[in-house]
Image 1 (spheres, one colour):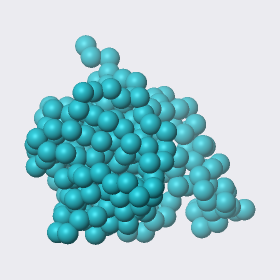
Image 2 (cartoon, one colour):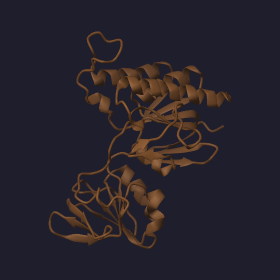
Image 3 (spheres, helix red, strand yellow):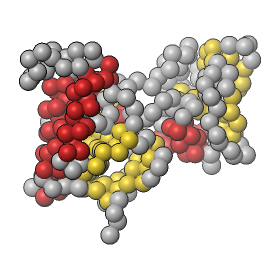
Image 4 (cartoon, one colour):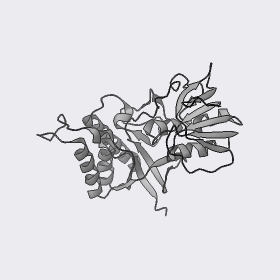
Length: 290
């Protein structure tokens, strides 16, 4: 028996993810929550429009209390960065920086972080050499030169996807500390970026010190991968970085659900709690064959 096989893995420990887990765990489904990045909820100094708190509650307190509530009923909650998700048809393989876990169902609830860096040319060349998904677009750069923009584990994971495709790869940290990465066709450049430039498509990266490098494409992988990044890699339909779901929080990929800020609409705790509960209930139905 695979001890790392779960009935459901939930990515995200905010109101949506926690709410989903409260239902799946009480239905006796083996449930795992994986989270790493800070929640936007923690930044809320005082929440006064959520039911049940007559004097309001800080976002940080609500966030931490939710995690403890899930733990108290037996939900496994692990702080590990997810760098890759694979759809193996019968189950999903979730790879973190520490381990690998398998699940029959997946709930995406990591909010709606925007990983688009504020660099001139990024938005202009999206779809014209700027990509946010190595596994989706790497094929188009076979035997060519590409760059990966980022300095963390997510950037390393994207580089690994490209290493046997591209002729050479440059990891651009944009002034941040260089990651430890060794490969014959990979180099690291830590200089701060001034602009991404080209005519009809990406052609070069210009640095603030006046130097440039030529590149055919740039894969953006700053920070930690969020729901929309994983959705694109899994073939899930998105619209303007929002995950498209039906009334049951189901995506177009069987067994994958999404809830909370990553689905767009009203960016409120009450909406996230509802969608998380709905996603959890739908996973229960699927597991029971209802």
